[in-house]
Amino acid sequence: MIQRLRKKPYVWFLLPGFILYTIFIIYPIFAAGQLSLYHWNGIGDKVFVGFQNYVDLFTNKDLMSQMMNALKNSITIFVLTVCIAMPVQITMAYTIYSKARGGNYFQVAVFSPQFISTPVIVFIFTLIFDGNIGIVNKLLEMAGLGAFTRSWLGIPQYGIYIVWAMITWAGIGVGMMYFIGAMKMIERDSLESAYMEGAGFWKRLWYIILPQIKMTILNLVLVSYIVSMTIFDYSYILGGTSGGINRNVDVMSLFFYRMAFGDTNPLGGNISANSMGMGTTVACVLFLMIFVIALIQLLLVYRKED
Image (cartoon, rainbow, N blue to C red):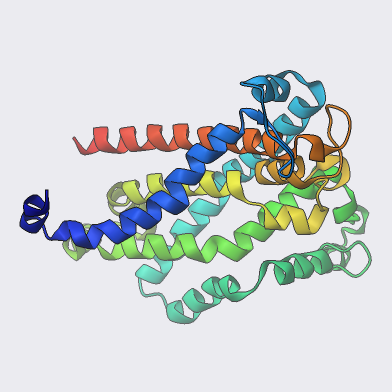
């Protein structure tokens, strides 16, 4: 065994990372899967119940209603990101890549929200959408649209869209940087040829740029899905453990947090009676939702490469 390792010295460089990855990633996944088979509050004795936690999650009307509402909100964030934010990111990246005047300043300005903490971002948007002093209502009044002013934060239907606006404003620069990096790997000859043939700004984007960065687009679609399913802090700060008015800003990660560390148990009694058991059950379901989509994405990518 030692002789084989001597012939492959790179294994020694991979071994520390593999050990850490196993301890902090692989083991917790299997441990959570095992824990979801128990009725446990994190302190007392664990009681093995098999798949009863999963049965309760999918058959209890209150639990199922909460999970489907959280899933709907998470999917809403994902769809809005892919359909609205991602085209904007591509356009901004192409504008900077084309060396438009002021592109460097624009790049820094768009990326700068990454350096602002989440509570500050939520506070800024709370002021922007405030019904009394918010700039949104002020702009509507200045435009003669005073009839459309609202107490935006108090209307449940708008809650998840405000959360998406926060996430997009904070993270739109990250996706833009990925697209800029992908565009810089494109051969300049193809763009110059298209320019000589008379292709304009948008035609070069549509026929030259997009086909050559499609793998980056697919990867960022997957990343957007993962972020949408795991986002937590914005909804928690804005709506608390309950997920806001009528759970209007509830998302999957917040639903998991509420099951594991919340105040009440929809199955009756205090949530601490089975907080860890039901919490890890929700976490395992969320993991499977992400894992299956990621696996499909990988299969599609490798098939296209073949």
